[in-house]
Image (cartoon, rainbow over all chains, first blue to last red; front, side):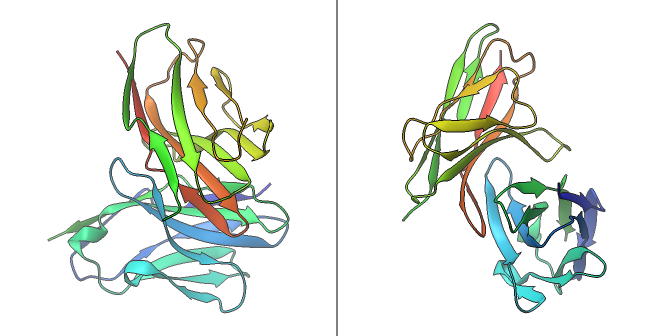
Length: 113
Length: 110
């Protein structure tokens, strides 16, 4: 079965700095990859997803991620963060043959003024 | 607009009580899921259903029960057998290519 590792549990950054949230996955078959964002006491909102095609995926709120098959990674990046980006971010993977999605433990992004 | 509605947003349970969390979707998705979220532990799968009148246990099903009598609805009952029910509960539905989540129910044992 597939699994996901988010390499950083907490990432503090200053406003307008760039940020990268790291995600590695393992699976023996082809996968779909996702990033979700969760604000306090809310559900998860889809930021972006990789299904096929270009390995560089652009999402909402200025985020992007790059699928690297050889390194089994799907890191999330933003060139300049805002205070409003403070939230929990979850990486997820599902195998193409089924709809079973597995989530990482989450990364808490804190943007400081 | 289509989406998933979870209710109530906050729920308090006394020791020994069963409580039911509601999850309704109008996305015409076949599959629905219940997750439990605890601080620092990400999302853990409780139950899922791929089709009406069928459901499967997830990783932490003990102390929980579900039903799927209608495509739109997937209620979760937290029974008295669940010894540590205080958590944030998330419902989701899916079609190929990703999940859509509700806004969650925070359950607290008092």
